[in-house]
Image 1 (tube, rainbow, N blue to C red):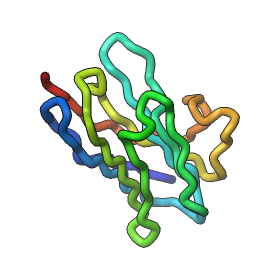
Image 2 (cartoon, rainbow, N blue to C red):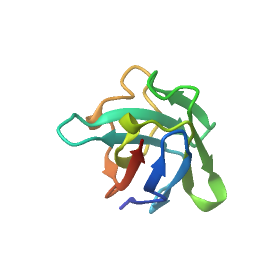
Image 3 (cartoon, one colour):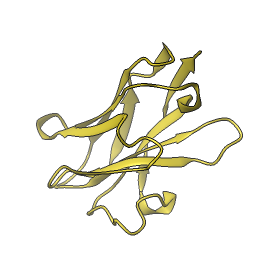
Length: 126
C-alpha cells in the first residue's frame, strides 16, 4: 500500500516562496507523482506531475515558470518549489501518485491517481 505524506505548508507574503515535500512509502519501481490544490469553494486543480523514471515534469499554465517539481529518488521524496507566490495560490495542496507512467493526455484527471496524501495548507497574504 502506497502512503503519501505532505509537509512544508505555511503562511507567506505575496511574492515569497515555499517548498512543499511529499514523501512516498510502499512504492515499487517508478511512478507518476502529481501535485493538486484546492481552494475553498473551488474544484481540485492539477498543478504538476513528474515521472520518477525519467524526472520529466509537466506543468499547468497557471504555475508554469513559478513552480518547479523535482524528485529525489534515494529518498522517495518529491518537492514542489513555489516562487513568486500570489494570494490566489492559497489552497490546500495535495500530492497524488499512480504506480505507472504519467499519461500526458489526462494528467489533470483526479481519477488518474490512485493514492493521495492528506494535504498541507498554503496561505499567501497580501
